[in-house]
Amino acid sequence: MRTRLYFLTICAAISVIISPYRSGAQEPGAANNPIRVRVAVVKGADSAKIFIAGNFRIIDHLSGSTLLEEKYLPETDLVATGAGFKLGEKEVSGNVISVEPVGGTRIYINERVFRGGIKVIKDEKKLTVINALDLEEYLYGVMRNEVSTWWPMEALKAQAIAARTYALNQVAESRRRDYDVMADVSSQVYGGIFSEKWRTNRAVDETKGKILTYKGAIFPAFFHATCGGSTFDAAYLWNIDLPPLKGVKCRWCGKSPHFYWERWIPVRESEGKLAAAGYPVGDMIGFEAVKRDPFSARILELKVKGSKGDAAILAKDFRRIIGADIVRSTNFKVTLVGGYVAFEGLGWGHGVGLCQWGAYYMSRAGKTAAEILEFYYPGSKITLKDRPS
Image (cartoon, rainbow, N blue to C red; front, side, top):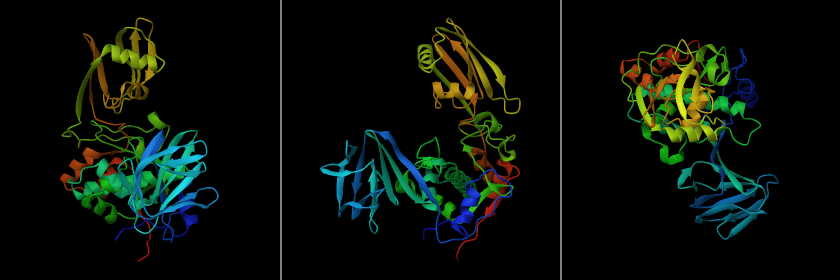
């Protein structure tokens, strides 16, 4: 049976999540209304493939009036028009529509199938498609994309609690936006029903209602693949100054396949990426790590030396510019070797919060989900919300 996360009343829920850093926040309990998560599964696209294998209706999101009611929609292109939207040969008016399944109907967007309904927003002729669904069912579609189904159950449960906490925090932070989270690595990777697996669903079910709090308040429980020996202080990345996100020394992820990495890319490619980002250094001459975090050894600021001048760039921005799959973390060394820029470093990801491969090896050593979370988020507390029996 699918599980849901409930709060005592919707007001109690709001009192917790709208002030995620306020100490002494009221803890939620059971209620009849589940928490919903709005996931942007398509953003700023010219079109999207849509297929509906059953009864559905399309509603004008503002007026609530039914625009179209059908029993089936073959795979077709969903595009924006001047007056509204076009689904193959069918047209509906409006700037925001809701597509609601009837009964057990599922909606497919770009060959992925989603629980719940979708909202489509038109911005000029660009589309944003938002899947709104229950928090616990959202986590079903997240877990397999963040960790492997064959990992020990305690590691999976730790990930489920962290992911639930992160999602609730994003719901709180995004009240005035059209969506709470993206479906990609900028939030948590969400793949819909096709991403669901039995063991990861079980980890969600066995931790239902469990979140992390600090002094009674939900906080953003960030996580990443491999820390490389030390997690990172969130204050350097997002100006979040919380003890559970200050960083810890980690001896657990040394056997991770991502602990050590090395990448080489052509110098001209690097110069082009920097110029496009507003750093026209000309011909690269060298690099200097201007500032490092003494705790984690991650670079905070990098100087790129070039024939047209030097550029001081925050390491987090440099990683984004060159590519997060190339510069896998900001704990790296970089040199020029012939016509290439050579990187070597430790860890994969931003480094804040839960080290996923560290959690894997901790669970292999017999540590529980609670012990894993206590280690990576020091000072936090697992809070179990009351639920209807």
